[in-house]
Length: 434
Image (cartoon, rainbow, N blue to C red):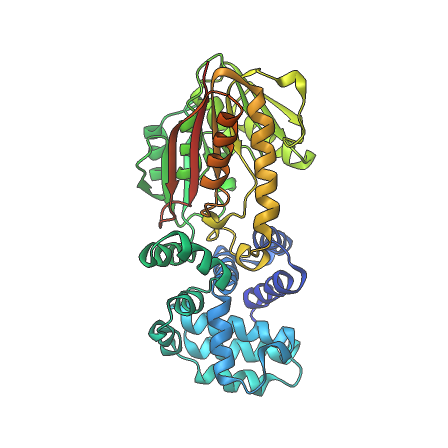
């Protein structure tokens, strides 16, 4: 009996995510790097697709397993359950995998990891079909249907339905399960879009034009960090919506800017790029290893105006009072707008986290606003879609400032919903009036 290595690695990764709460992107990279010499590019792509698809569609997959299993899901051996998830996922969601291969390879895995359960796995998987998944669309209750069909936690669907109409919530759920698209930002400090497009053409890498002049969407590229144009700092990976946040900050040359939650550095380095590397940017983060990510990105892109500092943005420091022309607060959030990139968010976050995260957001805004010069502008942003983290935070803060006799004005607000080509974000700009 020969076990397919790609499927076995995917199984181990999914087990780690499920049982040890490992982050999907981190544990995936770890296993791929460990097995780099044994895996082809096709294997790497297949493992990546298996992992993200299983994690993204877990509720639907488990519903289908339970339909055919006489044993309750929580009573099935964890290894066997994850083998079943892999098998059902291939049958339902991966069109290029023949059902016979999905069943047989799952049975082989079970002989190694499931002990005497191979016949159990075989029996269930042979009954599964794509029709099982389509039946979930016939559910009448909108909350139940969206939760099961798109594998979104009920609490989150309920929250979204309270804030948006059904069609918008369905789009959010749908695009949160889409395959991610790699978007790149052209580093105009070193090159221009036409030069990058020419180099992509030479490498036979397909791309899609973006509605943002400094961005392109790449097709079929997984390990972009291995490309020469990446290593040389001609491009960097960034979502268009994330890039728009830096554009809304609208930093000018020679201004002093604060990016109070800067890691991993995409928005920070874009601020520097817009400033043509003239001026000064203070880049803060809580953790030293994340500060190093900002420094490494800045160095690769040829940026010298970023001053990194280990600093907690929730703790006030009087020496920065009225210091900055512009401030970016891309605050920690629940990440509801980037689920397709980090599908484990769905299972690692819950409704109770809202109070904790909004308290942090309020503290950062309250503290850092004091660092803004009179006449200066502050952009508050999240990659979340819940009004508790967005409009409620901003509106409450503005009202409090006005009650205290402070002059403050909201001059821009936008919510970007997830689509096939971009993530979801909230962006708001306020000005501290003279």
